[in-house]
Length: 287
Image (cartoon, rainbow, N blue to C red; front, side):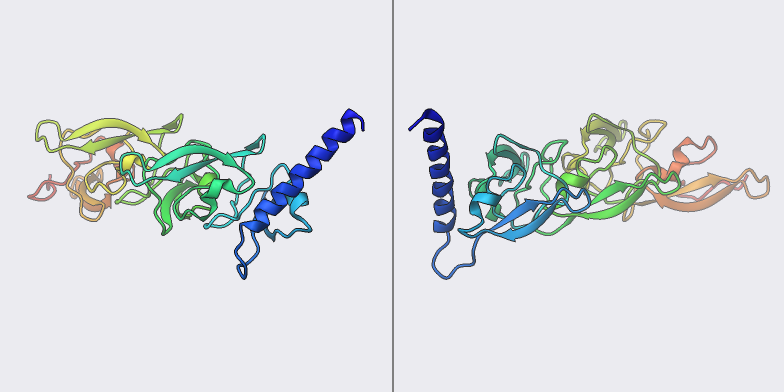
């Protein structure tokens, strides 16, 4: 027997071992294992297929297939698979570090396919800094429309890699809603005004990850993103993410209009020279 025949024999033996290992993992009476089969279609890159002894060698030999189908379903964006390995975000029980980036085998995912909170594959920008949880969370998805730059979308373990890889998307949706103006995002980071308890310095400008906002999304007083003119030197008291301001009208008889806007982005009014933000407790000036 020549060297090529020996190598071929060993490879076939390896495939048989993999097939047996996959099918042996199923207890009698349990459903057969499933896999995410790569279709080559950008719009729908994966389809769920059933693995049997007849097709195990075929699907487990595809360079872009992996198994089992994760608990959240097959991804809606192609996964990067290198040398039979795939990077995932393993959900931890830590609030400060909710995910651990690890690399696992595409054939079995090292048991992570059944983990409820794991993200498979890991997003391009890295693992989120805030947990998604078992229920879908939300994100601000960039629309490309200047008039309405963001729309609120649901994030699941299946589409996390897609949306968290968009250069202008961020998650979760802040308590005040998605901004009405485009946020400046650089290298996966966004600047926000974090509300402090200081009267003399009510806001601290900090930079956080767009994937989780480092937990600042649900903070009632934070401004996301930093307004164009910088963080205010007066605390903006918001109710359900809204704030009341005095908008300068340019009219001598009615110089100000009392309006309520989103605290996130301030609807562009932070750049208006004559606006009073927030509105005084006594109301807008009459002249």
